[in-house]
Length: 88
Image (cartoon, rainbow, N blue to C red; front, side, top):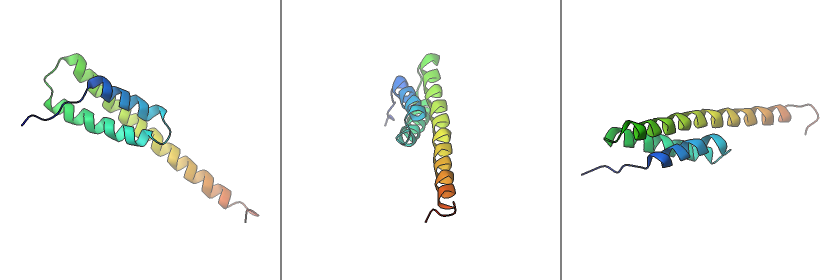
């Protein structure tokens, strides 16, 4: 049975969305990684489409790291606000 290939430009678009969208970027980054990894294994396309899959995977990784830093930053800010004297 042949595995499903995903669109190279769609994978790249998901990777780019993971960088630009604040919270939804986590979901699109994970999808970009999954689609790119599955498609790179089964594709026998040209080098251009493999480059798009690779670019989508890299953008997905960068987007996930960016989203993790944003979440850590918000947790830090919330704990600093709650630790201020006279807040409660």
